[in-house]
Length: 44
Image 1 (tube, helix red, strand yellow):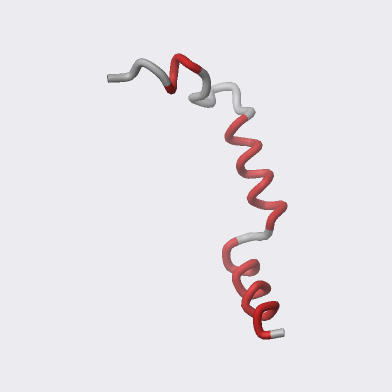
Image 2 (cartoon, helix red, strand yellow):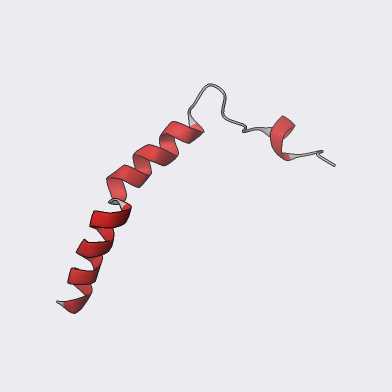
């Protein structure tokens, strides 16, 4: 029970699983997302 109280408190202040999944998917699927070989390889 003690761990669940901590989980609920952290979820209330930092956001739940659904919030973070939506945040990551918005960043990945954005039109201007810096993804792909041109963004990750060959930079010096």
